[in-house]
Image (cartoon, rainbow, N blue to C red; front, top):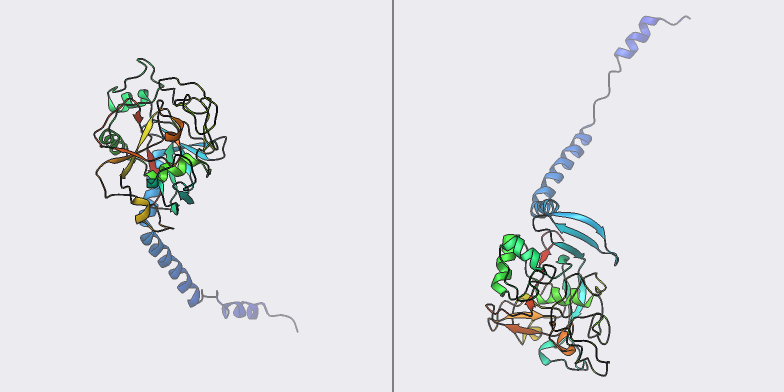
Length: 307
């Protein structure tokens, strides 16, 4: 029997396009709702990330393998530090250490950016409209000094940056080292601008320059940061508390001292300091209004909102 074309046509009509199953619509709707909920929950992190993208330009990785960024508004070059756990303070057997550096505590730090160099005189004058420094008339590559903690705070507020906590500072200074210095058990004037006539322990004497050096001179530490030891001492955000290390628990996240003497913490040692005062764990302090020829700073940018 020959096929009847009309019957084939009728057969097609009896099988219209399949409709999308109901469960598929629920799946699509659930995905849209879930996306909206996640966007709402993480809205602050998303906003913070977008803010970071607008404020920083990636410069690629440094010789130490860490990513560097340029803060667009100020021009400051900063190094990304991934954070994680590290041990703050010094062991009792570390020569010339102090009780205020103990007990040692393992702490956790969130990721942050820190200035690759101490803020220079050129940067300070350009961004703040004045030149308070005592050293090197016309040497704009030298670190800015003779600035108070309040001056540094004003600088940071202007550019949405922060003064580093002393935990951030020590983590950055150590560069992964557990020795007294990021360079090892001792330092030399070829590595650090300090009073080399007063070395650490039995190390040989080296030169005492008696002045600051350009912020990009000498050797960086294992994170690619310059002059974390010596050159100028650096302000930290914390209020000085000699019992601070005893007060917080091991494993605490991002410790910061906001109670105590009213003085602010100073770290790093300066061009006139003997070696023992340039150790990674050395803690000093002064009134926040204090200014001196050996006192500068470097800012940080914090990632806490989205890391």
